[in-house]
Image 1: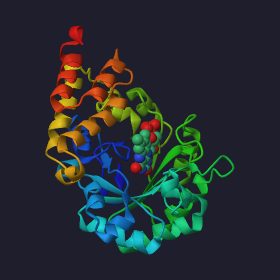
Image 2: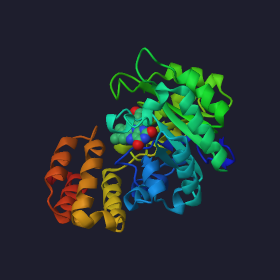
Image 3: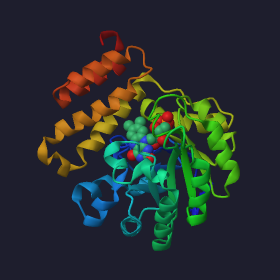
Image 4: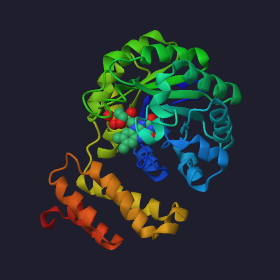
Length: 330
Ligand SMILES: Cc1cc2nc3c(=O)[nH]c(=O)nc-3n(C[C@H](O)[C@H](O)[C@H](O)COP(=O)(O)O)c2cc1C
């Protein structure tokens, strides 16, 4: 599996998720195996061009995450091309364009999914970026803006012609946000039409679903919320695809993942802690992950409540330890 000249060790990838897929999280998922590509949280092209510290932090990564794709958002072809050059200068393997974000704050700047409403302009953004950099330019889009305009098949062809090296399609419209089901038939149709690799995205919560989706003809699968619930899901999908039983994850390992995450976060983003204590920032990060990580666990709501009410790292770690390592007392 290749995107341009970038070889992916596996067709399964962590989908970009703002607020969630920071470098610490990506590294830990990658260490558990099965992950062929990681994508950063979306990064503002405007912020990159203006050199805003906070924006640059979102684009940080470590070598162990390679191959790494940095996702940028914006609607101005020249600024997006300049931002792509900055991303290339940062050493990223791939630069990805966000054409899927439905949030009004992003969409109103003619960025994110609203680019899908102006396909010719969207293709111009891709063309400007592809001309400006040597690394592959990829696009992540939705099925369309709304049900009356499910134009992903047309746009996919246009961005391929404009120089995109791969695309990913989340099979929902912006209007759907996260309701309903991702339309994998649409994703499969697009994969069939294009010559560049097409990744599908949406609703893979179990490892077997990832393996099944691969059979629809896509080049790869981007897994979002499924990884937040179960960081081993990509490794387990790789096991299933190879005919092995999926790795069994013990409660102690699930607890250790959170401890490892805390430890990595404590060493990161010290700058962001300016406005609050670093511990508070780490606790907030754990709350964000906890809301997904506890889904589907027996008594997961107890852990979620305990994480949300922890007011210090000691209390937080005690709650995690009690839940996973000493469940009788939890
Ligand atoms: C919390 C959250 C943040 C997200 N942020 C981004 C983002 O920054 N860029 C993007 O292209 N997609 C983003 N997405 C969409 C995911 O990449 C993915 O396409 C979508 O969640 C469907 O896949 P899933 O069902 O496996 O989660 C986000 C999704 C979630 C749940």
